[in-house]
Image (cartoon, rainbow, N blue to C red; front, side, top):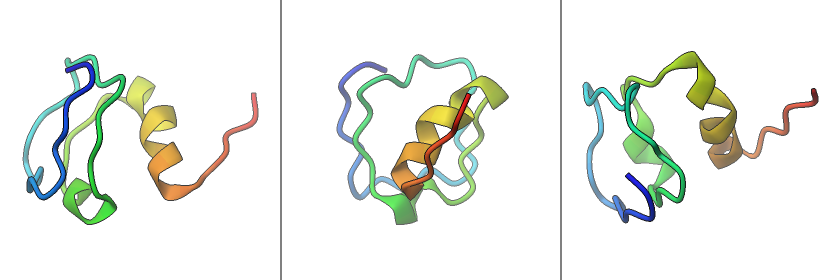
Length: 54
């Protein structure tokens, strides 16, 4: 899923763990309940304004 617009799309229960999510556009409220791989957490943390230091 590169450069996909999911604004207004409920993602609860949707498994994105095996998807390439680079460039996804989504509203924060629509992420509740989405299933992701631990490697994707850094990307999704950006939606929350969280900066991860390596």
